Amino acid sequence: MASETDILLIEDEPNIAEAVRFILSRDGWRLAHWPEGSAALDRIAALRPRLVILDVMLPARSGLEVLASLRADPNLAATPVLVLTARGGGGRNGVSVEGADRFLAKPFDNDALRDMVREILGAPQ
Image (cartoon, rainbow, N blue to C red):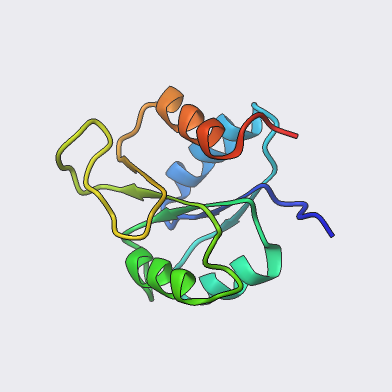
């Protein structure tokens, strides 16, 4: 059975979550949202999204812990992950995050977010 969720956004900041939803849903992506790190792996397993957009700094459980658990789960390890981070760093997209397919520093450029999602998933279905 194909997933009805293209993208699961795991983000605790309501304004950022709403912005990401607005930006990506305009392109036809189907998004679900989860506001914290706890039970995030359960949400990923239940929804089987084509992409997870994961904030690093989350309440209850960090995005890095969620990412490590995701990569350790043989049933979910292949799920692409785009990490959002407020931690600046080298390169135009912020710091490198071990295990992430892509990463994007906050505040992010809307077009950069859209381009990364398209790069990972292709055009909306």
